Length: 430
Image (cartoon, rainbow, N blue to C red; front, side, top):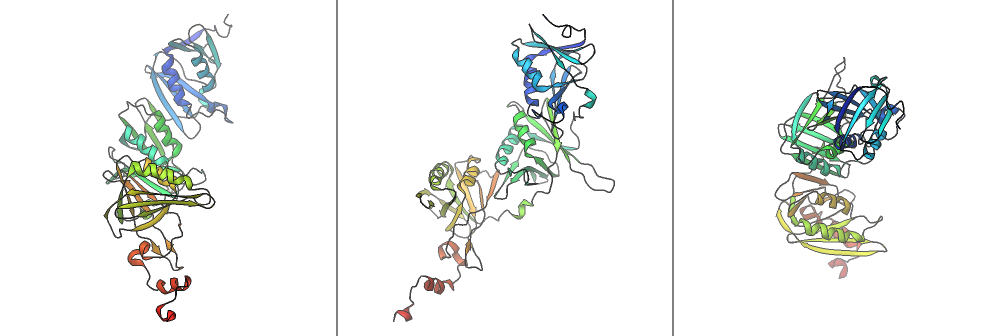
C-alpha cells in the first residue's frame, strides 16, 4: 500500500518515455560526481519548457544541458541523480510519469505498479547551467571531430599538474581548423577539413573533449563549437568559456590554465622521406618490441633506400631483428639511423589508416661533445596527411660515422677513432 506521502495531491505531472529519460540521465552521469562535499552537485535539475523536459547537470566546472520531448508540465525541481536512475531502471514499463507533491518537497515517480517519492533540493541553490551557445562559433562535421578527439587523446599529458598540455588545442584561422595535442614526447595535429573558421585559439580540457565523443550519436551530422571570452575593467582577457552542442544537448566548461606551446616551433622541416607499408610495420614493430624492457625501451630503425631494419636489444633478455621493404621518396640522405620508444611509435601508426606511411626525418647531428644526436621525425599517411605526428627520438648511443651523419661527418674523427680503437696508422705500422 502506498504511504500518505506518496499519495499526496499532485500539482503538476508529465508523462514521457522511460527509456528516453534513462538515456538522457545516463548522459548526465558523465558530468555529475558520485560523491561531492556539496550534495546538490550530485543532483540533476528537471523542468518542463515548451513541450520539452530540460535536464541540467554540473560538477561546478563542466555542465550539461539536454532536452527530450514530454507531455505535461513540471515545475523546476532538483533530485539526486543516482537515486532517480535506480528507480527508473527498476521499472519495466515503457513510460513513466513525474510530478511534484503539493509542498514541492518530493518528486513522485510512477513507473507502472510502483510509485516512488524522492526528496528534492531548492532549485534556487542549483548552479546556473548555460542553455545556449555563447560567443564565436563554428560548425564541425560530427564524425570528423569525434575521430580527431580520439587521435589527439593519445598525445595529451596524463598528469593533471602538466598545465596547458593536459588539454587539446583548437586552432582555427584562414588556413583551416585543427586539433593539436602534446605531452612533451610526441605531438599530433589533426586537420578538420569540414569545419568553419573561428579565427582564434581555445585550449579545451581533455575531459570536455572526451565528453563530446561520448555524447555524439552515430547519426549526428554536425556539431557546434563556440568560445566566449570577457575582459576585465583593465582590459585583461579572462579565461574563455567553451561550448559544444549537438542536436539535443549542450556542454560547457572553462579553458585549461596556462599557455599551450607554440607547436610550430618544435615541428621539424620536411627532410628525408621513407615510405613503409603501414600494416606490416605495426605487426613487425609489436613483435620486435617484445625484447624491450624498462632498462632499454627503444627500437632502432635503420632507414635505407630499399629496406628498413628494426632492432631491439635488452641486457639479460636477448635481441630481435626484422627487415621490411622501404622506399626512399626524397630528401637529403637515403640512409638514416635513429631510435624511438616503440609504444609511442605504435600509437602514432595505429591512428593512421593508409596502406603506406611516411617517416620524414632529418639526418643526425653531431655535438661538440663528439656525440651523435638524432632528430625528431614526422610521421603521416603517404597520400592523405590529415594526421601528422612529431615523435621525439630516443638516445641510441650512436657512434659518429659517415653512415649516420652523411655529409655532416667530421673528418677529424678518423684519427680520433683510430686512437680509441688502437688501430695503427700506416707510418706507425712501418
